Length: 256
Length: 367
Ligand code: SF4
Image (cartoon, rainbow over all chains, first blue to last red; front, side, top):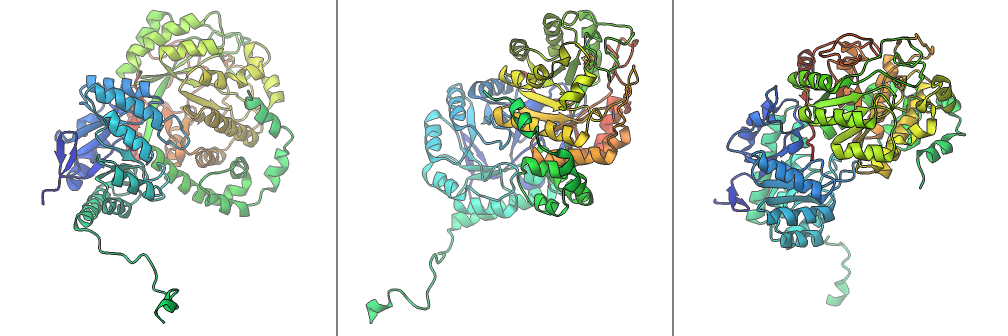
């Protein structure tokens, strides 16, 4: 089955995007990539250290993986744009995940500033993947701004509450003609399977893998769940009865 | 516009002693199940009522920390630029009354120290001065920051409290973090231990973090000198200060330090002791109260204790610290206080790894 994920002009077999920066040791990254098949990895530019004395993050990222630098630390559009430009100039490529967060308590993304940064960076030739609240109007504006995908959060980061924004994500999937990659709040493989069954294009999993006592096995579990969810979506889920058959029918009198 | 003083005033008539004595352990179970704690929950956790729940609370704090920060510890080191001081803080070795040799690094010496520190692989520097606005003027500090920028990706300062304009100048130059301890929130104690000089102005210092945030400083590190006054009340108010800053300036990262008073030149002692257990409890309670806040532990504490505190919620630690002027190349002069953990950066790196954590040197990019 030739079911590939297309972002910008590139194609990927895996629909699992992985993170970095939360592992107890980055030397685990190659193994995570291998068992999970993940081909795209996010890196926070603030952590990228090209002249580190110790072996550092970039030394561990397998060469075949696509780098998705993120603008973690940016508080407004201008800062996100600057960070993206530094990332490109330092050899991290022209993909960027825009994170504009100016609330350090809940870490919710600022849609307005994200949109502005997307517009600027897309016009400069970046492949832009904005991290957003699942909001239809913002999604539509991001299409016009030139985004290559949208990355709605499943739940507030770190809340481990499963997919609380499920209904809003469903609407994005239905209406937004771009890959919808669910990011943040996915606590367990079944959460990932759920959004994939709904038709999400991919998932980005960071904390749930990194904080597991066995990150490698957990990465494999996520990969399988995402695969299963995707196949279920492609196959088409069987009809689910959305109503109960009552023992005393309300419309029975019509047949008497 | 209101400031933190108005919050302090609200708590002014609260009977802390009674609350601390009468808090009941039955409430702790409820607090354990909450996602977000109220101010009173935080205070309750700091009291002896939580003693028998310490392990459960520690497990929760650990989980939260790993979720938010991963298994990582950020590493930085301090560089003292000068020990000239016009203040009389009676607990400090650099206090004006102490007859010690005073020294200030020349720009060339700053460059040499920075070079030597960066050769150890460090990327985050904390620049410190005593409280002397003439010897260590803003212009001198600006020059020091410009030099440090060549060697480090993140610059913090721990200096006298400044005006908004001064903070704004330094923020524009790339100073990311301001570390500023109120030392104690107890006004009376504050007056007793800060005999004269600009630092004896309680309100000017109290409002400094807000001035810094307004001026564009991205991250603030607050704290009290544990042992100056009643520790539960003092640490509680420091936590409230962090929470207040987080609400008023959501774009600012807040963190807390928990220095315990150490004997320095002058030999000031308060008789108030904060035990290791209490220190651990404070870390745990802070993590549960301010989930995304940083927690910093310096080399004041011993190797063994620092290693054991890591999983409870600590996110930042200093390494190979010198508390005299210079100290990496220039190595004479007197310490502000004695450090306990004397491991080199490499040794400390190895211990963090052995603990199953990743030492993080670079976590910022100057934009
Ligand atoms: S604490 Fe700071 S201001 Fe006070 S005496 Fe020491 S160096 Fe001077």
